[in-house]
Image (spheres, rainbow, N blue to C red):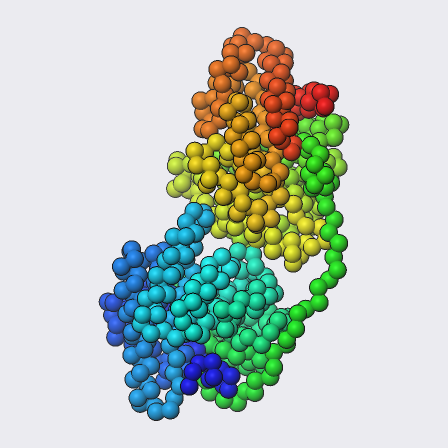
Length: 598
């Protein structure tokens, strides 16, 4: 019986975890379980047999991590894939021979291949294609794409499989306890998008959640059509003991919750991390008693939400010049100087005050918390920088929720400078996100949580790189993730101005051109020689003298900054002023001079 016909008539029970069960079964084995396909094939066969004897009718190949993220080169990947499929099919064939009339299916299993920096989309997609081609050459008639977090590769990979085969395709996404994938897709968004992809036969959820939380999440969902839905939760939440990851043995409780999940009309049931043949045995025994009620079909009603643009976003939309001023949070716990500067900026009606977030990986007062206080005390909207270096996805989400609650709606999202070599032994970088991934996460939060008052976020534009195609492609990726504007690095030379013009010709976006006044000869020389990519010309340096007074040097800084702004005025959507040493008086004079001329 073909798998589609089987699922139409029966609930399909899959196997449970392979990797975690392998580690438990072969205690002390620290190598990747997928490598056992080639090194210890009898171990792999043994686990497949255990799951079949327990009642599983869909075996997934032991190939979840069979890709170049974990294995060495294409040859090892394809050999591991081939061996993985061959072993699963051998176990299935043996079982069919011993149990005539039993329908057993083998699924080619693919885990995610991440491209964190969005540098090699075509390369990653080609790797997926190569793996799929190998599976198809082995005779695969069913594919499972597991533990996915977004649709970047899902749709093209599924379309590729469909273009070569009528194979059954199941795609599963992993959600955290808050109901989001690591890339920020909500459960409802997964259902909406997966349900609309023609090449997908079935979709659902696996990993990360235990059965209790998966049940709660599924109870809230409405499905757009009658595509098959899967649910493969983890055994629970693990703990670590003496370096080992341990899941509690709770098969009976797990199956109690799986019974409730089945009662929602789920079509494909099984287990993920921490589950064992015992879990599947109970699941298979109970499934014979379960009726399969219809799923809740229909699109959930969409609330009629009127989005309110922030004053800053509205200004950009109307084509008016915006003025953003950056202040540096203090290194200590005294915000007095920053507060004085913010109040001075309020007097000249700047559109946003922005706060840097530990640039150069040096710890300062938290930009988000300081933003709340500044905005509350000055009435000026504040935009903290958010660095992906320092916070994991849990902290990021919590931070956005808290800041939005306190009225902070504007953010500059940066990947973040790496930790210095000297600090790496005691300071760790996080980088759950890069700037693009973080923006994608924020886009989903805007759609699901902040529909009425969406977060407004921009990105950094490092315009000076040699590869303009790469620069503009990265800008487009950020735009697709909801990025509404870009702040540039400081601009000093005519070549810089022309580079911005060229970027504007290629990308339709809002660009806030960076101006950083040079407040002394020493400051000019430091920026010129110590800040890579910043081009301070001989002409500018020659306008400063080492023996200048502070007032004389500031007058030159104003002249130079206003001249730069004049060259940029018809190009820029606004200006982004980096305040040297928090000298806001200097910035107010520059902004006033620019406005007087226009």
